[in-house]
Length: 232
Image (cartoon, rainbow, N blue to C red; front, top):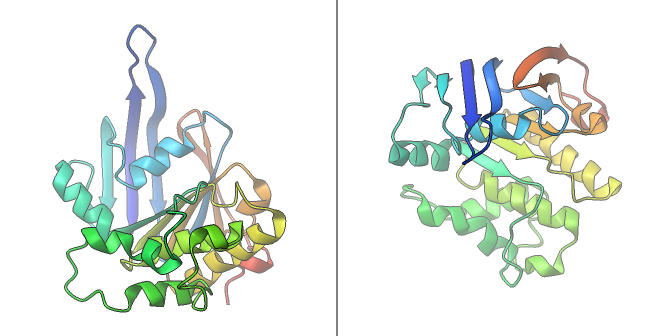
């Protein structure tokens, strides 16, 4: 589904030394993967996530998504690919507090070119186990429920790829387990998921773990996921 070839990304700060975030990085992600990208702070994992999500443009290399090199697309075409084919989940939930769960989930549809959007928001909330919370404001929900609303928002356009950046970082252990269980269920249903984390316990729920150091993928481990992430 995704092939990164020789990706490089350098940030240049006025009056400072250039910072090489990604260096000749290559990575292949198959359709249906549940992959964790792990690394220490400053290893390049968040930059890699931004490149995968077309939020940042590499300085060099190729990003092939289903046979199309999307790294070189213009800004408008990248935005269309991003809106239709990629969903994002972040550590901070980024929900509107006085807006209902359903209204939060339906926000991306305002920018969609889909002709039929009826029922997509409710369906997404049902996928994450919140079909009974559609009318609750996000401020009335627990942290775990808010993150599940954020996952539903990422799913509402039915993307091919779900990217999650430290999605359990603001959650207690019980809520984190619930969120990881949702990701595992979505993966079993065929969704491709890439999860960035510094927590080995979170990475243990994924079937593949890619380790990044100094802007390069240095190892990829195939493993049997722990219970919440186990495939059926």
